[in-house]
Length: 190
Image (cartoon, rainbow, N blue to C red; front, side, top):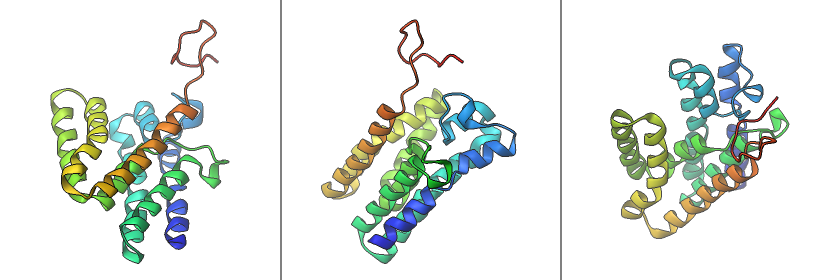
């Protein structure tokens, strides 16, 4: 399991979205919400240029999870995905300044529960086509544990809950600064 965690962290620590944005001359730390993840890349670059950031951030945890399952069992896979998420959030290469691990979670979901992840991907596509990608992505991520409950043992769903709790903690830790006017969630002033 230790090897899976080390490999997971190192894969997760690859700053894919930063590299994609740099290719177009954009510093994600200095633009948007300052988050060096796929969502900020999407907002700064547009879908046509940001899609490699989404795919790359997801692939990091997918590969980690598959590796963990290959050398161990389901729990080793979960540990590897968790490590990839931590690596994405606290990458050694960028002074431990990383993203919120949502896309790493999504990629890991395909390694841990391919059927539930596939169903959620279809759900994301349907909502994206009828409403918007922002809603499709959010609904699919939040629906994943409920869908997984129908496809996997409850212990796996509980482990998924722990991974989602990590994302929640990162959202709390990395809230946008509040403007002097006191408007919560407002964009930072510079």
